[in-house]
Image (cartoon, rainbow, N blue to C red; front, top):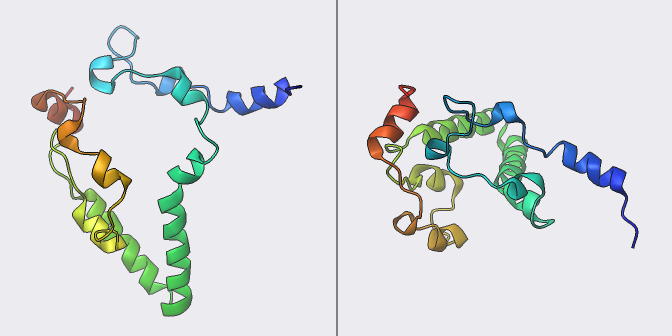
Length: 143
């Protein structure tokens, strides 16, 4: 079996994490308290060939729906829907409380569908819980 090392190297050069983009603490090391632990393996390569497609699924669906809506109703309909999406994304609870994004799900029509994330993404069973005061101060830019 022969591997093209040049092709693999060219694929990896775009996926290597840049040190300037990682949140740095006061001493030049990553602040694990605020940003959590990182795994280099997860940042380098996708774990499955369909992972990139799954990450962009909702974006691709929105593009298809907007182009169809534009062809049927004109330019104003997708622009109005995009403004409503943007407004619904801005509605959130405090950073330490889970948010269901019900308004956004209702606009997309996915409020009546039960998906993978509805069952297995229960915030009550989450392993990550931070200090509420610190999370709000970080969100407001006070830290």
